[in-house]
Image 1 (cartoon, helix red, strand yellow):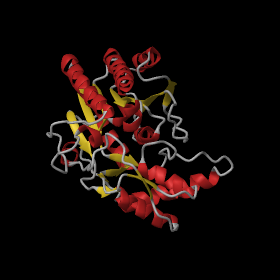
Image 2: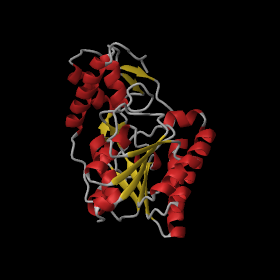
Image 3: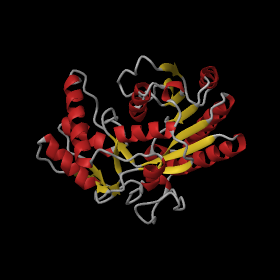
Image 4: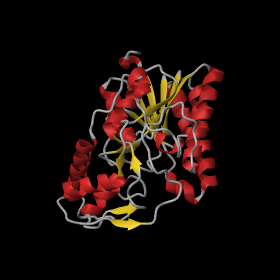
Length: 323
């Protein structure tokens, strides 16, 4: 493992939900950190003062210049251009913008002399339906959505770039990441959205029958996986999950109990392009990254509810509209 004190890490999306937690951990590990973020999805928390921050789209020339000047050892790509439903509204545009930005970043990483690229991928969308659960990395990708297809395309391009230039590359296939600092007013992130709706005295909203399952992973566990990937040497694709699946109904029921409210869910039609079950086998991450999820779903939900409740109390003077 490289000496953290000498490692220079560029993090795209470092001001966002997962990125901000990751940057904090990298700085705590004494890595030199450059954050590249266009501030389209800020988490609202200040980043450590030790981190250098550049406000730019990750695929822009400004980002490329910042990378070349910084000379990173590792580029950690966490920036995202939207989720499954946003991509579904205009799949062609999503794929075009997402891939163009990511390809621009990866090419800039090569020009900057990076020796390793780690990218955030999606175990929840890449495997599609029909995988034997918990899904392993050897399962053939079968994404149903433009979002999943774009993520898989990014993986393929990064791997090809690595082979061509002798760069170490790794795609982290996350489960459904949740926790403090997630946006509760967007269209993705059922846990954050449910917390926000409960605090606004609205009924939890469930798409479909709520029996669909996800592999929920707490954000500090995901951030720890990112840090392990930065300092690790494993290449290819690696699942970042718990190996356990939890239904949407079970999550909502637990959050309602945390809130102390007595309310029933509002069931609305299921959304397109969403798989029925997600569960990821994390054995490869255990073996090669020496990483495993530490936070149980119940402990994570309690901590997430507590964070949203405190934040909501502080923001009552300027309430936001319901998602």
